[in-house]
Length: 222
Image (cartoon, rainbow, N blue to C red; front, side):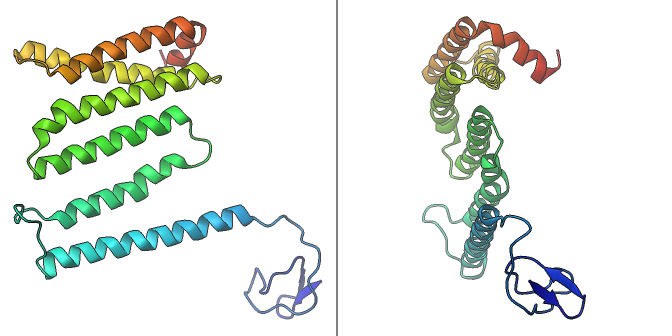
């Protein structure tokens, strides 16, 4: 059993320093009182290394952009380092947090999808291809999210998926309604996205009908 000469306590396990005063322990290692959180320690080290790498890349990008005037050809007026910092910041403190234990798969997919899509739309605005992004990339990406959530709804047994399919349904229909009243032609990808969203939502209701109402009431408090 190891001992602390300053705190006058005995410490189980093979700790090198006293948990109270951080003084070096003396004596032979004994049986540990509690299991070692080895998994948590590994995750902590990985997170610290990842966080350090993010800050290094962010600072390097800002320095290259503002101090050394490194610019992207044809986009000399765009401060690309700010966009890079935005992506890294949201990746580290937004997207990566979705993969913590206990988070449902549908929530992970939907949160990561919408977060990434917002970043992509902002980036495309500064590089002047936001019209193509809104007309094609956004609806095609939404189709992928809808299909993924439909598959998750079919295999889900805890009632944690239908609300995300409902969100996809609303997101797919709202742009069509807006464009209809504005009087502009709706891009084909948005029409395909809306039709597929309605079909898959109805299919999920048919195959999982007994859990749909319960989940919607539980999540939206209706």
